[in-house]
Length: 290
Image (cartoon, rainbow, N blue to C red; front, side):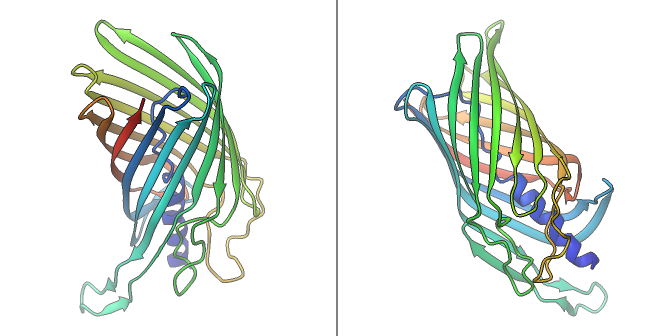
């Protein structure tokens, strides 16, 4: 039973950090856009329990290739998409440290991940402040019961709707350009998963004539604990519900030109419940369409 619970913690971080590529962009003008191709990687050997303690677990890994797109269809409306077009979940052989014998055979699955499609509307914009609202639909396109025991997952199998309000503030300190962003919202989940409150902060600083950006992010997820999902489904595999965490991440972006750049991101949960305690790493190239 303890080994099965390990699968919950890995899947939780996979799903919750899979949409971390929300960049520091205001609502685009019509025809403008931002596009990013990324690789994301996580390997976890420890997790936060349902009481917030850290316990070890059998090492599992996840890798995906994803496309993020944010395009202005009018001056007030953007369409936003996150598409993990290749997702891999794996576990290596479990080998005895004393005899060298294989205790458990490794396994893996490959599939597309859960796709997020959203639309953002500009509520207010001036030189000092920007306010928008975004509705994101989480589509259950990933594998929720893969592998020989149904525990290898690249998606959670449920359709969710996340509605948030965002606030952005550009400012300067001497000659340095900075910005800050904040959001809060409600994530309605289906198939007896608990709904969630989500909020986050982001700060960005430009250096070297805006060729380098340093970005810090923090995200919070709190469960309403109103779902009735059982710990074990009819296939016998266990799936996470009521996940909670405080995430902290940093990113550095370098612009080769005004339109093309590269970014590197490091993100992890500094506290949580039923979530992996190891950080994830992502890297990608992006294109600004102006």
